[in-house]
Image 1 (spheres, helix red, strand yellow):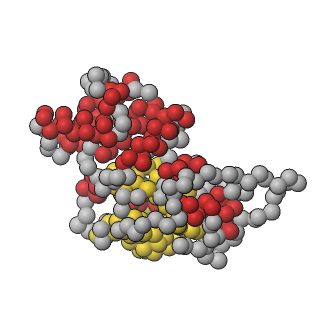
Image 2: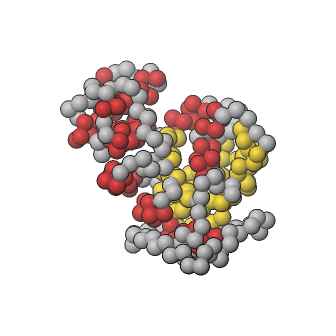
Image 3: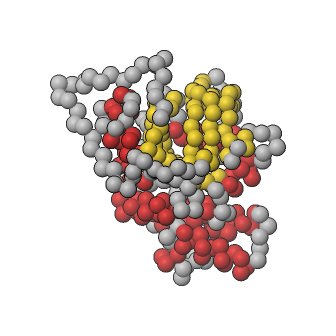
Length: 290
């Protein structure tokens, strides 16, 4: 478990008005045991310092992420959780002036910043689903097969197999199997997000990064994506950034709380929400700040 360092200020625990803010109640499902069985570490982040130009965004991040588990990154806006997520598949490389100036990220003990690592190949292993669904302006079928075609796979039987498998994996097959050659843009918002998940898993990655995947969805579509996350973790390691404490409690096995670019606490989800070790964590998950 990670505790806060002492070189930055702790949010005031005093209410700013005469009335004490109501404590946020988070229901953690009983299966979110505080005693998860051991799991292999897939992603190992050590002493990571990350900069946007001269501005440091992440400070000394040390984090071991378990294989085939769901880990939630939580914290107030601007705390660094999405920045760290994008470090894991080097999406930040696409922004001018960004740099990892200290530390490392290893996937299966291989440093992803090694000179012989191709970021494009890395992103095949580490897929990403964004906050806003972004299907290509192509058919549902072509959305799923796009990554495979780039890899040189053109056998129709193989493509058909992957399309059905991926859409079933994204719990979308029964809804779209009769309209595979219609535009993906004609789907509802929730269906589009599940199409993007299907597209991500079609290339068989090891890791799925999800950056607030439900923030633009209605409650019914959100519930479907959350159910899907439970199924997908049987095959993939999943990291989800969310502003919803309830979603983190429902979906994740472990939770990491960030504040001002620092990792404050990391533990089993039930521990984070029911018995956090750090006063800042308790204040955030109870709704007293953030």
